[in-house]
Image (tube, rainbow, N blue to C red):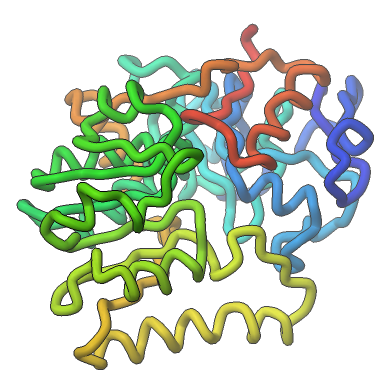
Length: 347
């Protein structure tokens, strides 16, 4: 089968990725579903795995490996007792903690990570729902209440585009976001857009004179944003929440268990002590991919009923060629995607 192979870990994408035309077809195990891939959505995790920055995300078999993890497509084969059968259209999420095997013509996935795809949503869009939309839905449902004032740092990425819409659906009273994509953010439900290239959000005159935020969601910055949120007094102390999707260093590197302790334990401890210390807002480190039965179906319904729409980066869908896949990875690497990065096997 055809697939994209990563020959080694590193950051020189052009030298690492290549198209393979005769890779072995994956062997489906009991409890798995073999899927003919129609589209694959890329995410920050794909860049981390390729770079080799987080050791627990490295492929078990080493390199070469097939990158990409979130897919949509058609069932080729499943167990006789499976709820899926050949011909079903499905979406599938990668198995935590590492996205792998998606940029290929075929992939075998545990049935628990597969859900029926809606016939009302193009498959090139459906593949974005299993990680970006799922994480956004979990955050909106858990942390946003009707009437909340919310600030989203980094609103125009794959998760942010979903989150802005879902915060609006949760009846947030005011949504501000940092982004260079003003018109896109306003169209998705933001009330105010701060161009971070021209102005610091914590120095914005309007925000400094307005009511404090109930919720700040950090999709892009890290520890500095948490410190600034406290010091600027833009976030309520009583009842205010700072929800971090990133680690303290958004470009984190963790190469062994000791480094994992030094990176993640301080964040977990901060989440504990701020919950009980009444003089600071509460810090929350968001685990956005804690998948439970029914979650993927619920995300799909949100698109079907018009609560949210899928936003693809203007460069997408990318064709399933070495050249175009190599164009997609740098947009994730440089954190400059505006919407979701998707590779279509059908173009």
